[in-house]
Length: 419
Image (cartoon, rainbow, N blue to C red):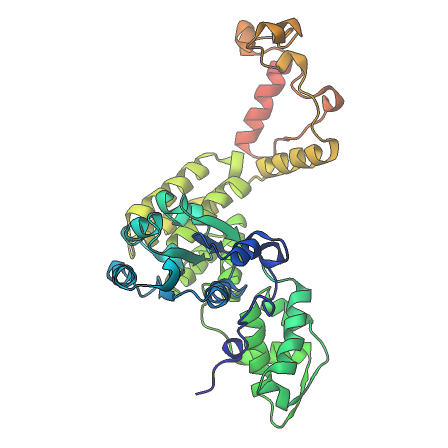
């Protein structure tokens, strides 16, 4: 059977590798590590199709290091220990440490990750992990502390276009056809920074045409993709489209829409921790001060699903989703921090007013640090008027109450104090 286009065109050297120049370009951190021949354990974190697995294989091939690979989806502690035992019992020239590559390492349980610790720590293996999820959440702290984390970015349009031209010119099957790329907007949009998806779309469009002459247009790409709808793909476009519909339904106070999109994710095998994390973010960004209890419940949901597995976790997610969808909405905290960050970017590091500075030493006191500060608890209602912003922006307002009962109470409270 013919290999898929993405597999046929998988790069075998850094010179052919597309994108991630901040990691593998001249003078970059990974390039220096590879050139030195001294590879330490690390984790590659980035979206699908940006070259995590390819980069690990290139490193192994370029340094001629024994390479073992496991997928966290279908491997367990037994598989890890078998490889470690094999490495220990095998003598390698120059005492080189083999690489153990674990794809989707975020899916390894705590016990599975624990089984790697000793081998990584004593140098039996060099671990390279690949993950689409934040390692801070998914990788146990002892293992994370022994690995550098390198972030891979979605490929730029220029990278994808360069890859497309390379594929059309070099692939053994495509170069036999006369392929005329009239338009690229749809290709780039549906690829979404994912090289593998770009090649899958190219292969789909070309294979659906009769004859050796193929014209690629935006309309044709859209039409072919609609004729061949992808199944739910936790790493692909549907993953992001469905979580987007879910978030927008909760934000739009539609519990029916929200619970439907939740069901789509549950049925598709989505990681419950991914859903719960998005609910925590949403509770702050879209509900915020209109109902601070929303964040408490979302955080409790996140904690609970770490203790409860499927299928019961679906109930916890459903309860939180319906509650948040029915909450009053406010993005005042979101707007406040973004407004303050914009001010910091514009005005730079403005000096802290003297009366707000800390004065732990006599020298600082002699320089009037903290002088003139009014201790709020010494005044009626635990409030006193004073400036808390740098002089240059002392009249700026970053937070404004929105029209909901909770924030109106806050606004009225502050207004009463300031009288």
